[in-house]
Length: 477
Image (cartoon, rainbow, N blue to C red):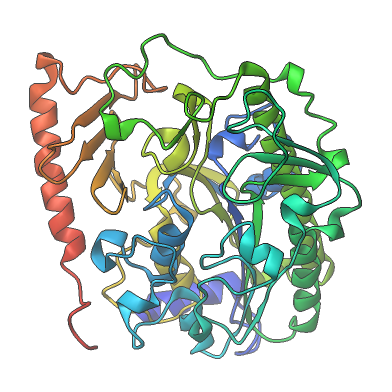
């Protein structure tokens, strides 16, 4: 019955075509380290993302999508495999294949095994940025997922231009450097000098080459991941002097457990206010650069007449702190680090906004169902297909994410954000009232008035962990 309903759905969406043409194409676009707070179709009006915004106006914009691990490798392994990190114990910079085994299909592999041309352009599974981009290497890819793969080599922090290091450089005298640090390069040359420009070009070529047969094309852009490198023109709209930093509260860290202080802060990075503003401006410039490349890919899809038979997905692997709580980058389970933009455009479906809690894990079953493909009953995501007809549907009553090697947990509900350090809570708890304190300044976990709330969440977490760890990974199927 389930697949009969799928067939009928496909007939409605893509009807009137031959059997081969009824298979929808899939264009999956993913940015790297893009927080929802930096996208202008979400809540940021200072950063310009016209191409993402246009897609949001044409598809369903999900406002409460959360990654399952706010670090590149485990996040990507999770949504590509269809399992929570806590189920596979995939917490590192790997593809996840090591833990799911050879018989389980990744998301793209499912399409490959059903006759689709599947291709990866640049970073989809984990790549080290900048090192794998500099070398043009595969990173920890999953070869079984693709018919073809293409890397987009770029100069990264070595690009000619005006460079500056704003992390760990309080006197401003140190030279720029590579690695996972906030180096800024206002680069010479055009878009095609850099990795994301090359990625867009290759993606457009593949769309033209494979337009006559069904494809699953995964396009991974590496910005705005550090280093903040983009052609100079993208920095012009963002003079750092005009950047407004997030609100700062005295004693903000006093009620946060030690493990809740992020690994990069304005304090340990020795950043002054000018450097903070430069970092935000450079991040926005990198976002705008990638947005322009996304626009090229979407315009090619339209030019080739494929919009009416292509499901388009846009998201990011996790968020990014831009000075909130004096935090920078990712890893933490606070809102800016763990929440991501997600847009799904399906031919024939009206634009809408969905405020239900959703997870990146939900992409696998959703897109597979839309394409009419049978997938494993053990996949742990929830299908979002129902939101296409009724965006008011409540898919989940909460979102779940982990970090710090799977030892720190987030349960995010309508009212609360609950963060627990260790399964026995021995390293502390955070509890935020997201209605009255959406910026998460007041930790209520130690307030005796909320002892029952904390107790309830401890039990919810136990049940959630039991649920996600009850999986098929010890069985063959």
